[in-house]
Length: 387
Figure 1 (cartoon, rainbow, N blue to C red):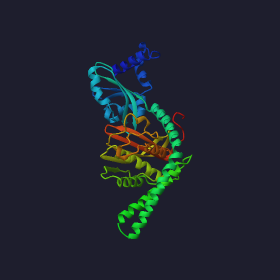
Figure 2 (cartoon, rainbow, N blue to C red; figure 1 turned 135 degrees about the vertical axis):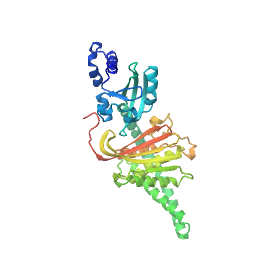
Figure 3 (cartoon, rainbow, N blue to C red; figure 1 turned 60 degrees about the horizontal axis):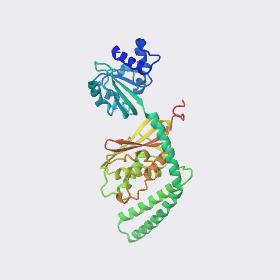
Figure 4 (spheres, rainbow, N blue to C red; figure 1 turned 45 degrees about the horizontal axis):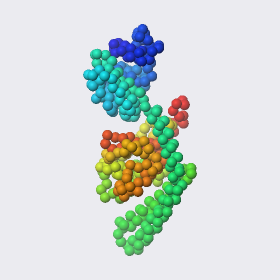
């Protein structure tokens, strides 16, 4: 360990945290460095890792010796604003605070943190502190979802009655159309479309009935997620005169899971429709396996991750915090003839929760990403913090 920068760390925290590490105990420099409770990375002015503390070893899943000599992009594949700031801080000698940085670790995990980048010595050594925001954001997100679930429950009883009436009319009209087209023996393409309407109305009727139950319990069976996504996209394409380009990137190793195919199809329809309505020219849908991953605060051994990314306009900032609340929408009543109900995301979130999963949003530099997490095998029912 380079003694001068480590002594500088000790001096820094002896001043900021008076007590056991007083100025007369700088001989304990390494102990102070090692015992701080948040990840610390000692960096050169080129971003090379000189040393780390044990909390950083645990975060990155590598030993101190393996981390030494690495450059920052090797351990943080996306380091947001940190990389560009290293040269600035080294040159100016001024500390920089970067709040709410959305980082990605080398193993693919997301990590949200407030990042302090401090100049340590005149030789150009820097100290990077990572103060995790994930726990606070998880609590906030959980509280929001409870409120959203309550709002959705209030709407279900009246809304389901209102939806089923027009669905019955649509089915009757489609049946008449099927009868006439079948009798005439003409236009098989129109006949197929009319039969598709009947099938979709029947599917929606079942889903609406289930959504209207006080205790929503979806009947589940073995389902294959890629097939459901493809079905949803084919349905949506029928409505679009010029559909955007879609890229399907499915992991072939993902097994079938227990779920309700109709409800999941509705979820993907809602998410894909949102991407189209945002003006996206390209939509990417990918499926991956995540191991030892939490959903709704419970950690599972295996989770299916479905990411739907688009390059559209994104969710407006003024509704981002409440986007899963019923009747919240970023569209105006005149948008593409929309009546602006704002129910799609709240229904999608409710369906995700009924599958013990969750729906997560992330703003992209251009567009949006919605990630649906669906657990396969329970790992432990222990809530975080109750170990």
